[in-house]
Image 1 (cartoon, rainbow, N blue to C red):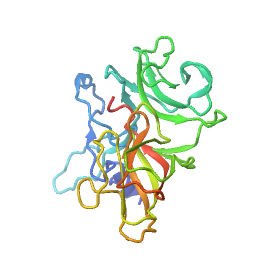
Image 2: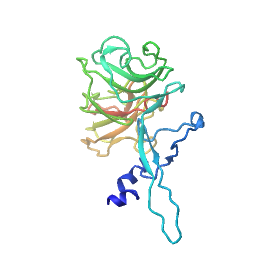
Image 3: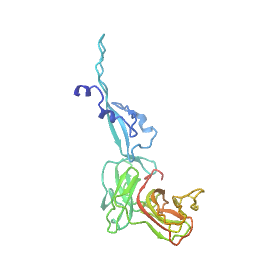
Image 4: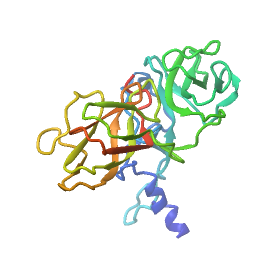
Amino acid sequence: MTTLASSALTLAEWATRLDPGGKPAAVIELLGQTNEMLTDMLWMQCNDGAGHKTTIRTGLPSATWRLLNYGVPKSKSTTAQVRDVICADAGNVAMLSLPAGTIDCTTVGANGLDAGTLANATWYHVFAIGKSDGTVARLASTSLGAPTMPSGYTLKRRLGSFRTDGSAHILAFTQEGDDFLWSTPPALDVSENAPSASAQLKALTVPPDVRVHALINVAVNFPDGVDYLYISSPDTVDVAAAGSATPLNNFTSLTLSGGAAPGGQLRVRTNASRQIRYRFSHTSGTNNVKISTLGWIDSRGRNL
Protein backbone atom coordinates (compact mmCIF):
# COMPACT_ATOMS: atom_id res chain seq x y z
CA MET A 1 0.00 0.00 0.00
CA THR A 2 2.88 2.36 0.75
CA THR A 3 4.28 1.81 -2.74
CA LEU A 4 0.90 2.39 -4.40
CA ALA A 5 0.20 5.52 -2.33
CA SER A 6 3.42 7.09 -3.51
CA SER A 7 2.34 6.94 -7.15
CA ALA A 8 -1.49 6.74 -7.16
CA LEU A 9 -4.17 8.77 -5.41
CA THR A 10 -5.56 7.28 -2.21
CA LEU A 11 -9.25 7.60 -1.34
CA ALA A 12 -8.39 10.22 1.27
CA GLU A 13 -6.48 12.27 -1.30
CA TRP A 14 -9.29 11.89 -3.82
CA ALA A 15 -11.77 13.22 -1.25
CA THR A 16 -9.77 16.46 -0.99
CA ARG A 17 -10.27 17.00 -4.71
CA LEU A 18 -14.05 17.12 -4.38
CA ASP A 19 -16.11 20.28 -3.86
CA PRO A 20 -18.78 20.47 -1.08
CA GLY A 21 -21.32 19.08 -3.57
CA GLY A 22 -19.28 15.91 -4.09
CA LYS A 23 -18.21 16.79 -7.61
CA PRO A 24 -14.59 17.06 -8.83
CA ALA A 25 -13.26 20.43 -7.72
CA ALA A 26 -11.62 22.90 -10.07
CA VAL A 27 -7.90 22.85 -9.21
CA ILE A 28 -6.23 26.23 -8.96
CA GLU A 29 -2.99 26.05 -10.96
CA LEU A 30 -0.65 28.45 -9.17
CA LEU A 31 2.43 26.37 -8.49
CA GLY A 32 5.58 28.46 -8.42
CA GLN A 33 4.13 31.31 -10.47
CA THR A 34 2.82 34.84 -9.99
CA ASN A 35 -0.24 35.95 -11.90
CA GLU A 36 -0.87 39.72 -11.96
CA MET A 37 -4.39 39.10 -13.27
CA LEU A 38 -5.44 37.75 -9.85
CA THR A 39 -6.09 41.27 -8.54
CA ASP A 40 -8.57 41.88 -11.37
CA MET A 41 -10.36 38.54 -11.43
CA LEU A 42 -14.15 38.36 -11.02
CA TRP A 43 -15.51 37.41 -7.60
CA MET A 44 -17.69 34.42 -6.85
CA GLN A 45 -20.00 33.53 -3.95
CA CYS A 46 -18.49 31.22 -1.34
CA ASN A 47 -19.54 27.57 -1.48
CA ASP A 48 -19.24 26.57 2.17
CA GLY A 49 -21.29 28.89 4.36
CA ALA A 50 -18.93 31.40 5.96
CA GLY A 51 -15.95 30.31 3.87
CA HIS A 52 -14.97 28.90 0.53
CA LYS A 53 -13.35 25.53 -0.13
CA THR A 54 -10.86 25.35 -2.93
CA THR A 55 -8.36 22.73 -4.04
CA ILE A 56 -4.86 23.87 -4.90
CA ARG A 57 -2.09 21.85 -6.53
CA THR A 58 0.96 21.55 -4.32
CA GLY A 59 3.17 19.31 -6.44
CA LEU A 60 3.53 17.92 -9.94
CA PRO A 61 4.02 14.29 -11.02
CA SER A 62 7.61 13.17 -11.46
CA ALA A 63 8.82 13.60 -15.06
CA THR A 64 10.67 10.81 -16.79
CA TRP A 65 11.97 9.89 -20.23
CA ARG A 66 10.23 6.93 -21.78
CA LEU A 67 12.65 4.33 -23.12
CA LEU A 68 11.95 2.04 -26.04
CA ASN A 69 9.96 -1.02 -24.93
CA TYR A 70 9.79 0.32 -21.38
CA GLY A 71 6.72 1.59 -19.56
CA VAL A 72 6.42 4.92 -17.77
CA PRO A 73 6.82 4.79 -13.98
CA LYS A 74 3.69 5.82 -12.12
CA SER A 75 3.70 9.12 -10.31
CA LYS A 76 1.06 11.55 -9.12
CA SER A 77 0.53 15.19 -8.40
CA THR A 78 -0.35 16.38 -4.91
CA THR A 79 -3.14 18.74 -3.87
CA ALA A 80 -4.43 20.32 -0.70
CA GLN A 81 -7.93 21.52 0.20
CA VAL A 82 -8.03 25.01 1.64
CA ARG A 83 -10.97 26.73 3.36
CA ASP A 84 -10.73 30.47 2.85
CA VAL A 85 -12.50 32.54 5.52
CA ILE A 86 -12.84 35.85 3.75
CA CYS A 87 -15.59 38.36 3.07
CA ALA A 88 -16.12 41.64 1.30
CA ASP A 89 -16.79 44.67 3.46
CA ALA A 90 -20.32 46.13 3.35
CA GLY A 91 -19.29 48.73 0.77
CA ASN A 92 -17.46 46.22 -1.46
CA VAL A 93 -14.30 48.28 -1.07
CA ALA A 94 -11.97 45.55 0.17
CA MET A 95 -11.79 41.89 1.13
CA LEU A 96 -11.43 41.11 4.83
CA SER A 97 -9.49 37.93 5.55
CA LEU A 98 -10.38 37.01 9.12
CA PRO A 99 -8.40 34.37 11.03
CA ALA A 100 -9.91 32.39 13.89
CA GLY A 101 -10.44 34.48 17.00
CA THR A 102 -12.84 35.66 19.69
CA ILE A 103 -14.54 38.82 20.92
CA ASP A 104 -13.84 39.84 24.51
CA CYS A 105 -17.08 41.45 25.64
CA THR A 106 -15.39 42.85 28.76
CA THR A 107 -13.29 45.26 26.69
CA VAL A 108 -14.01 48.16 24.34
CA GLY A 109 -12.30 48.44 20.96
CA ALA A 110 -10.95 46.01 18.38
CA ASN A 111 -12.02 42.44 19.22
CA GLY A 112 -14.39 43.77 21.87
CA LEU A 113 -17.51 45.90 22.25
CA ASP A 114 -17.73 49.18 20.37
CA ALA A 115 -18.87 51.03 23.52
CA GLY A 116 -20.01 50.51 27.10
CA THR A 117 -20.49 47.19 28.83
CA LEU A 118 -22.51 44.13 27.93
CA ALA A 119 -26.16 45.00 28.65
CA ASN A 120 -29.00 42.84 29.92
CA ALA A 121 -31.54 41.33 27.50
CA THR A 122 -29.97 43.05 24.50
CA TRP A 123 -29.19 42.10 20.90
CA TYR A 124 -25.67 42.71 19.54
CA HIS A 125 -24.50 42.57 15.95
CA VAL A 126 -21.06 41.09 15.27
CA PHE A 127 -18.83 42.65 12.60
CA ALA A 128 -15.58 41.89 10.85
CA ILE A 129 -13.76 45.24 10.72
CA GLY A 130 -10.65 46.30 8.87
CA LYS A 131 -8.12 49.02 8.14
CA SER A 132 -6.92 50.05 4.71
CA ASP A 133 -3.54 48.40 5.45
CA GLY A 134 -5.17 44.95 5.78
CA THR A 135 -5.39 44.82 9.58
CA VAL A 136 -8.58 43.01 10.64
CA ALA A 137 -10.48 42.48 13.89
CA ARG A 138 -13.95 41.79 15.26
CA LEU A 139 -16.45 44.11 16.89
CA ALA A 140 -19.81 43.74 18.66
CA SER A 141 -22.33 46.58 18.67
CA THR A 142 -26.00 47.21 19.36
CA SER A 143 -26.04 49.35 16.21
CA LEU A 144 -26.43 47.71 12.81
CA GLY A 145 -25.76 50.77 10.67
CA ALA A 146 -23.38 52.86 12.76
CA PRO A 147 -21.18 50.92 15.20
CA THR A 148 -18.51 53.00 16.91
CA MET A 149 -15.37 51.99 15.01
CA PRO A 150 -11.96 51.75 16.76
CA SER A 151 -9.32 54.23 15.62
CA GLY A 152 -8.07 53.56 12.10
CA TYR A 153 -10.79 51.04 11.22
CA THR A 154 -13.00 52.13 8.33
CA LEU A 155 -14.27 48.84 6.86
CA LYS A 156 -16.96 46.60 8.31
CA ARG A 157 -19.11 43.59 7.47
CA ARG A 158 -21.83 42.08 9.65
CA LEU A 159 -21.23 38.39 10.44
CA GLY A 160 -24.18 37.61 12.70
CA SER A 161 -25.89 38.51 15.96
CA PHE A 162 -26.22 37.31 19.55
CA ARG A 163 -28.47 38.16 22.50
CA THR A 164 -27.92 38.43 26.24
CA ASP A 165 -30.22 37.25 29.01
CA GLY A 166 -31.43 39.24 32.00
CA SER A 167 -28.00 38.94 33.65
CA ALA A 168 -25.91 39.98 30.61
CA HIS A 169 -24.93 36.40 29.75
CA ILE A 170 -24.80 35.51 26.07
CA LEU A 171 -27.60 33.08 25.24
CA ALA A 172 -26.17 29.86 23.80
CA PHE A 173 -26.76 28.99 20.16
CA THR A 174 -25.21 26.83 17.48
CA GLN A 175 -24.35 27.96 13.97
CA GLU A 176 -23.87 26.11 10.71
CA GLY A 177 -23.22 28.59 7.92
CA ASP A 178 -26.28 30.85 7.76
CA ASP A 179 -28.35 28.64 10.09
CA PHE A 180 -28.62 29.59 13.77
CA LEU A 181 -30.40 27.44 16.35
CA TRP A 182 -31.03 28.30 19.98
CA SER A 183 -29.40 25.69 22.19
CA THR A 184 -32.45 26.04 24.45
CA PRO A 185 -35.52 27.59 22.80
CA PRO A 186 -36.61 30.77 24.60
CA ALA A 187 -40.02 31.31 26.18
CA LEU A 188 -43.03 31.34 23.86
CA ASP A 189 -43.12 34.44 21.68
CA VAL A 190 -46.87 34.06 21.10
CA SER A 191 -49.52 32.54 23.37
CA GLU A 192 -52.90 34.06 22.72
CA ASN A 193 -56.52 33.06 23.30
CA ALA A 194 -59.49 34.27 21.28
CA PRO A 195 -57.53 36.22 18.64
CA SER A 196 -59.61 38.14 16.13
CA ALA A 197 -59.75 37.47 12.39
CA SER A 198 -57.72 40.62 11.68
CA ALA A 199 -53.97 40.45 11.04
CA GLN A 200 -51.73 40.26 14.11
CA LEU A 201 -48.05 41.31 14.00
CA LYS A 202 -45.86 39.52 16.54
CA ALA A 203 -42.15 39.93 17.31
CA LEU A 204 -39.99 36.80 17.58
CA THR A 205 -36.71 36.10 19.35
CA VAL A 206 -34.54 36.69 16.28
CA PRO A 207 -32.04 39.45 15.42
CA PRO A 208 -33.47 42.97 15.03
CA ASP A 209 -32.84 45.52 12.25
CA VAL A 210 -32.42 42.83 9.58
CA ARG A 211 -34.75 40.47 7.77
CA VAL A 212 -34.18 36.82 8.62
CA HIS A 213 -36.06 33.58 8.03
CA ALA A 214 -37.47 32.56 11.41
CA LEU A 215 -37.69 28.85 12.26
CA ILE A 216 -40.76 28.38 14.44
CA ASN A 217 -42.93 25.69 15.98
CA VAL A 218 -46.65 26.44 15.95
CA ALA A 219 -49.49 24.89 17.97
CA VAL A 220 -53.12 25.80 17.23
CA ASN A 221 -56.42 24.90 18.85
CA PHE A 222 -59.71 25.17 16.90
CA PRO A 223 -62.46 24.20 19.38
CA ASP A 224 -65.38 25.78 17.48
CA GLY A 225 -65.25 23.92 14.16
CA VAL A 226 -63.96 24.65 10.67
CA ASP A 227 -61.29 27.34 10.82
CA TYR A 228 -57.97 28.25 9.17
CA LEU A 229 -54.76 29.95 10.32
CA TYR A 230 -52.40 31.68 7.91
CA ILE A 231 -48.89 32.75 9.06
CA SER A 232 -46.98 34.98 6.65
CA SER A 233 -44.25 37.58 6.26
CA PRO A 234 -45.18 41.24 6.81
CA ASP A 235 -43.31 41.90 3.54
CA THR A 236 -46.26 40.36 1.69
CA VAL A 237 -49.78 41.74 1.25
CA ASP A 238 -52.12 41.03 4.16
CA VAL A 239 -54.76 38.54 2.95
CA ALA A 240 -57.26 36.37 4.77
CA ALA A 241 -56.72 32.69 5.50
CA ALA A 242 -58.78 30.46 3.24
CA GLY A 243 -59.57 26.83 2.61
CA SER A 244 -59.72 26.78 -1.18
CA ALA A 245 -58.48 30.15 -2.48
CA THR A 246 -55.01 31.66 -2.53
CA PRO A 247 -53.02 31.91 -0.31
CA LEU A 248 -54.75 28.95 1.42
CA ASN A 249 -53.47 28.41 5.00
CA ASN A 250 -50.80 26.82 7.17
CA PHE A 251 -53.14 25.08 9.64
CA THR A 252 -56.73 23.96 9.34
CA SER A 253 -59.53 22.27 11.25
CA LEU A 254 -61.89 20.35 8.99
CA THR A 255 -64.09 18.87 11.72
CA LEU A 256 -67.46 20.57 12.06
CA SER A 257 -67.59 19.75 15.73
CA GLY A 258 -64.22 21.36 16.38
CA GLY A 259 -61.66 20.12 18.82
CA ALA A 260 -58.78 19.89 16.35
CA ALA A 261 -55.33 20.95 17.59
CA PRO A 262 -52.84 20.80 14.69
CA GLY A 263 -49.21 21.87 14.92
CA GLY A 264 -46.05 21.98 12.86
CA GLN A 265 -42.80 23.76 12.03
CA LEU A 266 -42.58 26.72 9.65
CA ARG A 267 -39.94 28.94 8.09
CA VAL A 268 -41.21 32.53 7.76
CA ARG A 269 -39.36 35.71 6.75
CA THR A 270 -39.52 38.51 9.30
CA ASN A 271 -39.44 42.25 8.79
CA ALA A 272 -36.67 44.42 10.26
CA SER A 273 -38.68 44.67 13.51
CA ARG A 274 -38.45 40.89 14.09
CA GLN A 275 -42.15 40.49 13.27
CA ILE A 276 -44.22 37.89 11.47
CA ARG A 277 -47.97 38.04 10.84
CA TYR A 278 -50.74 35.59 11.63
CA ARG A 279 -54.44 35.66 10.80
CA PHE A 280 -57.39 33.37 11.57
CA SER A 281 -60.20 32.96 9.07
CA HIS A 282 -62.82 34.10 11.59
CA THR A 283 -63.08 35.48 15.10
CA SER A 284 -63.62 32.88 17.82
CA GLY A 285 -63.76 33.15 21.56
CA THR A 286 -61.96 29.84 22.03
CA ASN A 287 -59.26 29.68 19.35
CA ASN A 288 -55.69 29.58 20.62
CA VAL A 289 -52.28 29.92 18.99
CA LYS A 290 -48.78 29.40 20.40
CA ILE A 291 -45.47 30.09 18.63
CA SER A 292 -41.98 29.08 19.77
CA THR A 293 -38.85 30.34 18.02
CA LEU A 294 -36.25 27.62 17.38
CA GLY A 295 -33.74 29.72 15.42
CA TRP A 296 -33.27 31.67 12.23
CA ILE A 297 -31.54 31.75 8.85
CA ASP A 298 -29.48 34.90 8.30
CA SER A 299 -27.84 36.08 5.04
CA ARG A 300 -25.37 38.02 7.25
CA GLY A 301 -24.77 41.09 5.19
CA ARG A 302 -24.89 39.66 1.68
CA ASN A 303 -28.07 41.59 0.91
CA LEU A 304 -27.21 44.92 2.60
